[in-house]
Image 1 (cartoon, helix red, strand yellow):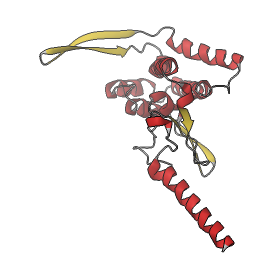
Image 2 (cartoon, one colour; image 1 turned 90 degrees about the vertical axis):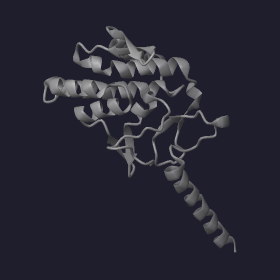
Image 3 (cartoon, helix red, strand yellow; image 1 turned 135 degrees about the vertical axis):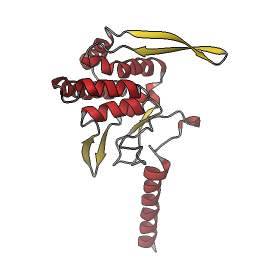
Image 4 (cartoon, helix red, strand yellow; image 1 turned 180 degrees about the vertical axis):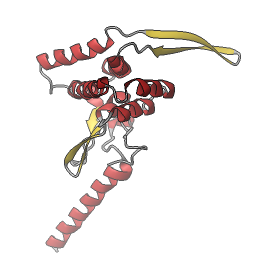
Length: 207
């Protein structure tokens, strides 16, 4: 598996949607959910630049220990499942695709964006942020990111790491589409070493 970015998330997918899908991993052939708490979900969103530190701290103050906390995490995991099916062409049937679209569109239904004009030296820029009025609004930045990914990217370039023990996905924007590993320094090296040892074993048998 690739080197972790503190505290525990992988950002190797070349898009936040794939990085979100990659919060469910495998360790020693066993599934491990990195979105195990409300705090971990908020931390991931900050690291993915989908939530500001100030918003994270505000939402944690509002929902930590609140009964809505578990509902938000459960919905985040469900959103991740829907995205996992949508990014894999041919794996989802028409009814499951419609269910996934309805779930995502439900999160976006009442989305409100606030835009302000900001002075930056002698220039001006536009800053936009989502307004959070109810608990599940927290997931709307991820849903909006899904709209961007699914409408602007070629799903044929979504690949799984070729290490059989690794479940991470990435968007292959490499030259000629030749990327094979989530990380060449970890899974890539491990598979090359395994292939080398297998060749040595075969040569020993033949000699």
